[in-house]
Image (cartoon, rainbow over all chains, first blue to last red; front, side):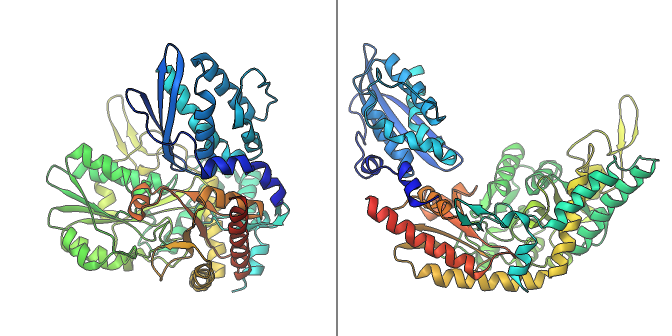
Length: 143
Length: 406
């Protein structure tokens, strides 16, 4: 594998989210808080969701981890903000399929930058990094 | 010792990963296996496989001879007094848990103390946490010095007349610290405590003489010393093992059984309930033959050269943090500035260099180092200075790559 292959993993947009994370911090006021970590590697995230009338009004995160886990959290919060809970869960399902290398139709999902993470599916050891934030979101919504 | 020639004997190392010749720097996690070990396990299954100890038939005798022959090889390898003191287990974790259940939980009570260090692998930490909770004993820590070593003064301070058990790793799997086991054992004994050693990173790399160390228990895993996974050793002093109850009950470990009671076999078999890991033990025996042929002392000298070379070369990289003492076993734990260790490990893998990234099963130690994760390169008898050059080149490329994409 050459560095060209690495470029399918570390896309420019991913590194931008890593360096300049969107929605990093804490929600002011009441919010649903989910803590999740990846015990095999030590990555951890705290996700806060503010949900009103079945719509995600605000989503913020704090945490520590590699470029993939942190950029994924940044992209995920951006994608689910303003979305209905059902849509957020559908996105999460689509993301899991994307990580399995499946061809996913995201046309109706409006996932934004998230699709830049598609290349992670070629790096099996890093899939758990990418899905951490989405798992936290699912757990929050299910609660 | 000719590491390049030794490397030839490890079939797995002769391959390309992502278009580059493999450089395997993850032996602290598990070592690779020489052809002689793979062939010994293969031959056992092709020619001698049978259950042990009750076979009247020929294969039963052959399997028993091989299994017990491996035990004698282990006895010699660590210089135990008798094969009664050599118990085959699934690995270091099972060995330590056996001590935690059969010795600690049976003998400790409120007011007693267990003493360990913050550099322990989870497998030499959680069994004692749980034993302390179950018995009401207190868990105390010998503090680490700034360089990641322990001082004997701190050991004398922490180990008291109430201490019943001291457990310590021989070699830290993160810091590379080599602990003064013999001296700590003496302090433990002066206070009436037993000494448990986690030898997972010790026995594969240096001559271990349990009688000289005088420790009460010494534990290690086969897979980190060229043997298959799933086989390990619990060494214990006979007088202690005699008094301990088995940890697992079932076939193979009984003497007489009636409807409401049973008695146990003699040592070491009373601790080996169920059909044992016969092929694993045969593989471990072959691994010991292999290591003896090379010579443990030669391996230690070779690894020391590699460790010194790696420290010199890695210290020359701008923005690298290296954790642990100057004097160390053959492993280097590090981080590159502004690059998460997972990302480092991914780029190194693209260059064919295998290192480990994460918390290395030592979360309290990560907290002490004030990091969430690190990368680790660990060396064994088949590694060469060229491997370290490849590591350094790849780390420079990692820096360049992440410098560019930022």
